[in-house]
Image (tube, rainbow over all chains, first blue to last red; front, top):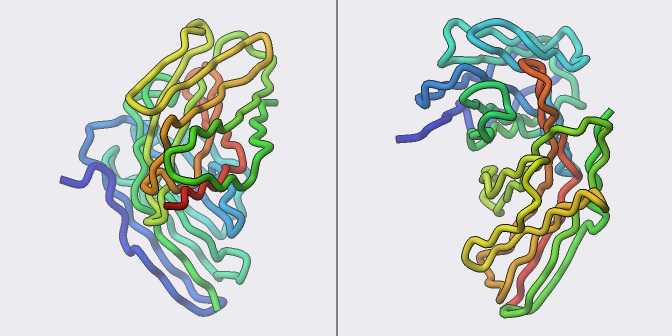
Length: 114
Length: 116
């Protein structure tokens, strides 16, 4: 069973479109995250949610809107996509605040904006 | 503010060589966690180790070993007798113990290529 699963794995779309990435974890973790990995492989946190509550919002443009319907799911909706949004987006979860347990990452969603 | 520096960007070795990946971190906090993650060519991020700031014991897991030295703010990772399957990008990361706002700060990663 996949612990943290995200869909889709690849997403190719045009500038200006709106798209969503879904993430689900079956580990029973309380905290979920979105990280962005740019073309230079640099990983940076975007958001974290703890029990459906937004905890970290790391100065991400408000075109990005995370939604957590329950603690097992954290989706990412992106409006008006721009070329610079092209990246790999990783969902992750942890058993509590991150220092308590290591992050378990999904396999990533490669977003390409043309 | 916290920072993780992985000064090496790319390392290439021949199979069976030993290789050390360097990690230097900066934080004013006295309590924190350090991590290493591996990202193979398939793209997933694989957790390797977590070490808290109070535990300076070195750790060995098979061919992998980690050397944590608070005096030099370093948390280096050594692969002994490297194999082609070790080829990946390796990330060092730091997390402060500050409650629900804890987040991982990653270094820029080291691309390791192991040639047969």
